[in-house]
Amino acid sequence: MIVVVNDANILIDLVKLQLLPHFFALDLEFHTSSLILEELHAEQLVQLQVYLQNGTLKVIDFTDDELITIAMLQIEKPALSEQDCSAIVSAQKVDGALITSDNNLRKFATVKKVEVRGHLWVLDLMVGQKTITGKMALEKLDHLRTNINPRLGLPKHECDSRINTWQNL
Image (cartoon, rainbow, N blue to C red):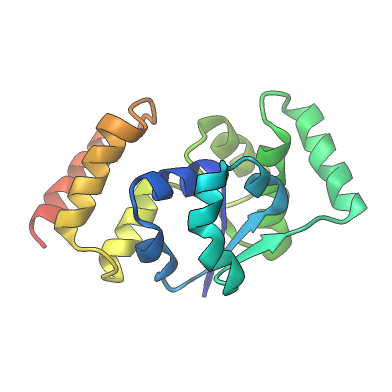
């Protein structure tokens, strides 16, 4: 089973897109850090509560040594927040892929030898595992790009490729 660590921006966007049930229906092992959860607003936490309570979304807490590692990563890359650095340490701790749309975090995590995935990978999986239809993926991708996170900077050619594929499903 693929193990993933969810950064706050992915969870926030999935809440806004109303895709949480479809996301957590994927055949993945889901994690996030306690520090990342602190970044979320109360209404977002309310929507995640069922997945936290039933153990679908596991919360990673840190030892003192891991907190030091997080602080050292922040010193190394000051542009990243404590939560961002906790995502890297979490992914390393559970030997999982990091799901994020934060470009600075993506690049730094890659340098730290952490596998990184993003929105398109998540939508691909949802279509592939049939938790959403191709039509729904098209609608959600369009909504994400135009209304929810227009500065996201998803690669146009990658989006166009998905649009062509999902239209034919």
